[in-house]
Length: 110
Image (tube, helix red, strand yellow):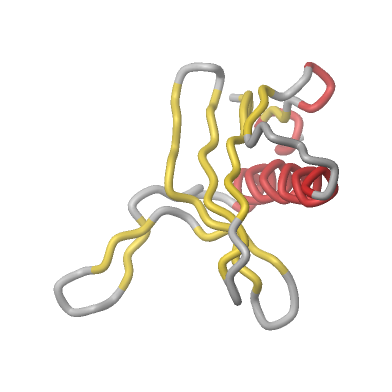
């Protein structure tokens, strides 16, 4: 499984830094991820819904650390790229990953 595209929309809010959608194998999209500024660094929050009791519950999430790290790495790399381009009138908020940027679960788990 590879992350083949990261779509990111920058936000300039206190803690919310971006909304993100990721595509796996050019076939499956997960929307609703967020780049959040935590107390010590940035992290990627998975899509979630508020339950009737007010708690938030993830509706999609990785089931192992290797996959979480793969997703976070790809998303945060694209976030940094977008920040760097923001001052140069980047315009586009999305792009497919190039062949050398594709991340495979098999590579991470080996």
